Image (cartoon, rainbow, N blue to C red; front, side):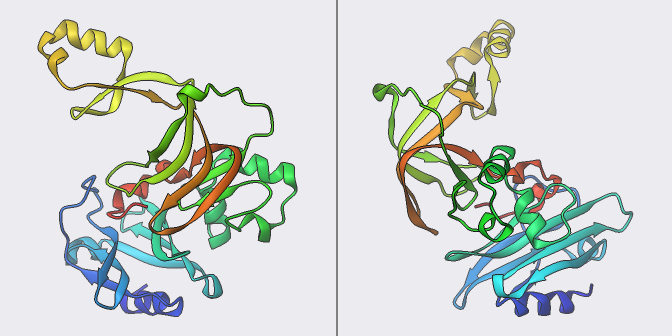
Length: 271
């Protein structure tokens, strides 16, 4: 699809697309292009960044569009056919967004489902939700705010009140704006050590081996965190780009599946 045709596809859902020169982006994607959300005096727009050679090496195709929902599914295919990246571009509550899509989705609805973690899809099945209700941000199976899903806990959850965190931020990372949870409880998971050199964390065993090999590393600023803990939320959840939601009982907290998409490295805007 020619870029001018792509611009018209975005216009049909009420959005603007601008092709802009490259700039330094997180992850330094090998394919040489990035999709961003920009803002000017007229508001937000989708920004496709890359130099002429990089953009010429990628074919952009419109896979599906739902005009009334203001969403479209975009395919970015490398010239040699080795990369086929998919992006869901659309409007969620107050802001435009772009999300990298894992798997083989070919429609907007399939892309939305591909972003849901397995426990969310299982909750939908238990509640026998229709496709229309499953697409809502609030239904019998879950509440959603941006990339976060909150699934009601159906069994009794023993929570130590002393371990409840107040107005705790949760974030995907990479510079995204955090969501703030009135009451947050974490349990289980693997303890990891995190610092600037190891932002993803290293295990206890890896940490001890590192200290044996480089004793000076012990003097670095380390923070103990838990990898893949069970996370539960109750009360209000706030974010500047989304309406506040209120969880009256404990809900399991799950992030969407965007991290499973290789094309996530081609996003310069996350959240």
